[in-house]
Image (cartoon, one colour):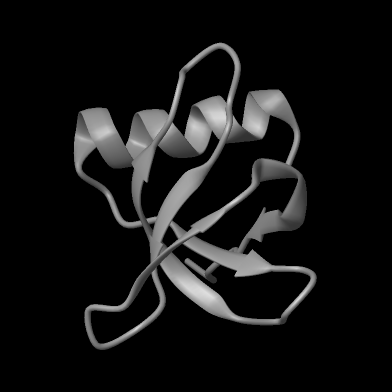
Length: 69
């Protein structure tokens, strides 16, 4: 995930409370973004991967799952 994409996803999640689905490109897991770390120098993303299980993914390991409108 590029920095501009990270900022956009975090703004939608944290400021507009909109859901953001992410895919971990290393594992193939899909999760919902819960919280971002550091706005200008991203270190990690807190992600719910199902049934309340939380994990941290690194921005360079994820891509946003685009939904059809």
